[in-house]
Length: 104
Image (tube, rainbow, N blue to C red; front, top):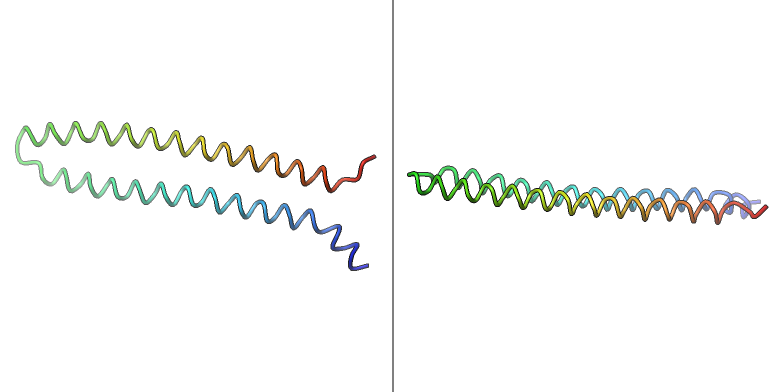
């Protein structure tokens, strides 16, 4: 009797484990992004505080363009990584469901 319940609940446990793993991976990406953005913001504020003349302003503005380009690139990379995780998750869910449903 216990074996029957374990067999019935196994796919649910597998799906829960998969969901948890997926959430952990996405959270790790988000935390990394938040940390990087916070670091860039602090560096930007420090650079802005060092503006003393027109040349340093020009240097600051140029660096901000580079920062914006890097942020954009990282955002695209993160979105692609999350999309891959989503595809992998969907594929894994499909396999679990197919495995748990007996062939008719």
